[in-house]
Amino acid sequence: MMKDSEFPPVNSPSINRDDKNMAVLSHLLPLFGFMVPGLSIVIPLLIWLWKRDSSPYIEHHARESLNFQITLALLIAVWVALKLMLVGFLLLPLVPIIAIVVLIFMVRAAMKAGNGEFYRYPMTLRLVN
Image (cartoon, rainbow, N blue to C red; front, side, top):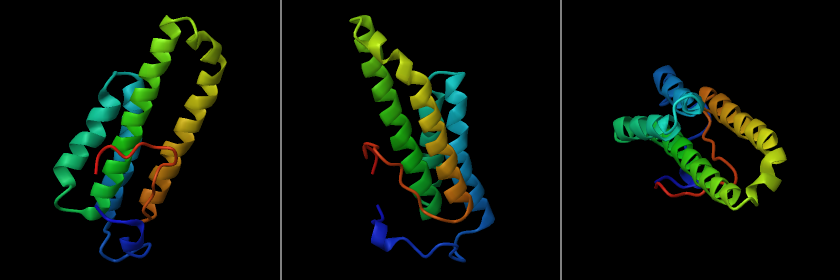
């Protein structure tokens, strides 16, 4: 795993257009998880497993996306458990706000990936290294 200080400079010539496109897809394709449950984790996992040995740039972005999606899944599971205990209904007004923040994070990550920059999602558990 690369540390922040070990990242190559932005727009490094070693990062080609195909790598940037795959990194962008690792952030945007999990949006299909809103339609098919579990797909939001499976897509970045498959990209990470497929490209982790061939491109450190794609590996970084796919890992970040995977960690973010796992964090979201855990938060949703906690919210559902709280909802079953009727406490989660108090958090119901926050759901649209949280959904918008999640979308902003994903789009921002995709934009950074498209520009050849490394990005780390804020407030994310780093479970996959």
